[in-house]
Image 1: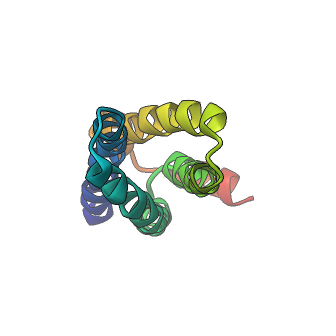
Image 2 (image 1 turned 45 degrees about the horizontal axis):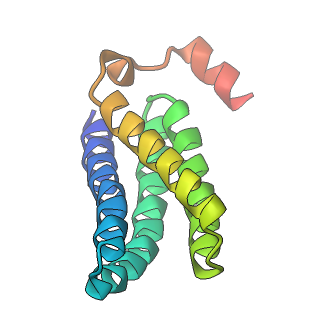
Length: 132
């Protein structure tokens, strides 16, 4: 499935960029102001990468893949949108734990795309259940 390969690429790109965010925040806390100047635009860029992830996951699902990928991508998009708002409002009590959750979910999705369950195609009966 070519759509699975695309999903893998975008999910891994997204997970790597998401994992870079806490590193930049830590470097900022260590005294480097330039790290925070990178943290903000990377966070905004992540939302756009996540939009691409939703698109690719939807194509993967429509090509016979699992709907789970679309649901997780939508969850990530909602979480990242809220994360951006909490970052701009300096609500670190929510921003930090939500960031940890986003890292965990993004990495789990990237790993899942390489598992055998991601390669299993939906059966016609299963597809009818999902679409109903």
